[in-house]
Amino acid sequence: SDGTELLRVGEFGYIKSISINPTDGTCWVTNIHLRQIIKFAPDGTELLRIGGFHDSLSVSVNPADGTCWVADLYRWVVVKLASDGTELVRVTGLCRPSAISVNPGYYGSYDKIPPQITIESPVGGEVFVAALSTITISYQVTDNIDPSPVVFAYLTDLEQGTTVQVYNAQEIDPIDIGGGFWTLTVDAQDSANNMASSTTARFEVIVDTTPPVTELEIGEPQFEAFGRIVISPCTPITLTAIDPGSGDAGSGISRTEYRVYKGTIPCEYTVYSGSFTISTGIQALEYRSIDNVGNIEDEKSITLTVTHISNYTAF
Image (tube, rainbow, N blue to C red; front, side):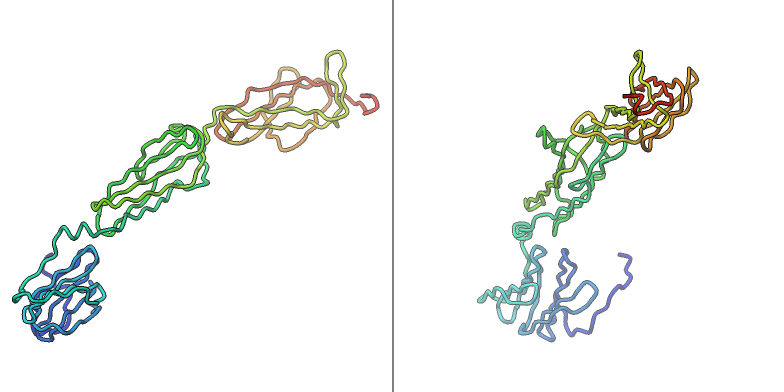
């Protein structure tokens, strides 16, 4: 654009006409001296050379399909060539055709290639959890001719049948669309009215606002006396937690924790890693679980009398 020479190709006796294909950058040239039509790549590489033209005054390339029309004044003909140089049409009996041009309407009406759609995110099988994940909408739409096809993208709730319009590069908090199974669909249409559509396999959105539930299991030996549960320092205590979630599934258990203390003096929670035992005395056991999005279970408690007993005594 500043006048700098970028490329110089060969020596030609007499160049009368030149036409550049804006789709792929190839260039068609008429060489009257050699009676040839020559096609070049954008870097100047010669792609093909076609002889048999006497006085080729004009060439015009069709960007829709890469064909090239040639007007040969001396032979009174107009010839249509395929992009590989194959002769497709020859019209004779024309009185000294000195110029030729492709109808712009031909450019659009013969574009039969729909846009190409590539969905990058989300993809089928992914799981997004509210407060832990972000759904990023990412897709690419390209077309062989139209630089800016019309695009419409939307999420579909497979359980409710409702849709939510989305945009490329949009980031969505899962809680904004709700839990369940979803798909992303991208529709595109180019300037020649060719249409394309692509839909992902289903992905899951989990919105968990329900705290976990922890169950306590006391092993043997144990027995009840005067409304109290009596165990030994060897009796195993087991905690089991589930996260039911608020829909089909929860976010999962982050940790279960417990603490044991005498009287009213509290102590720090210990992360549960397996069955444990408690030392002798009247002990207060408190326990709870926390799920992966931070929902905390209300603390549960039980008072245990721990003394040296045997299975026989318990029986």
